[in-house]
Length: 126
Image (cartoon, rainbow, N blue to C red; front, side, top):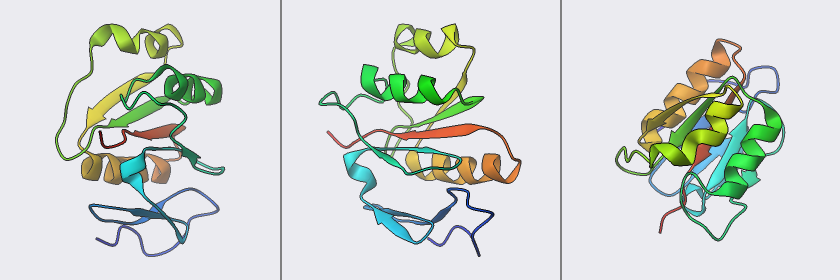
């Protein structure tokens, strides 16, 4: 599915998404291996052996960038993590939403269009 018509001032808009990959600013990524995106900058490949959306290393990378909101993408269906695993985000006053991956990609683009500081954390496939 094509997501956007053009690039917007260097932001990491998701151009296209399918079941195996997503395209960010013309560059294709295998989202099934896990990925972290911010408004700008290079996407971060999954930083952990832990494939949970709340892996310590993944959350550390997000907290370091201090976005206003994090979209946690959990695959084909929305699967809420244990609330206690999100304490690190709450401690840093970072909001979060949990969504299936296609919805998360669309929401991330909307947030970038609103010029909000956002992060997209795509959980790797087990």
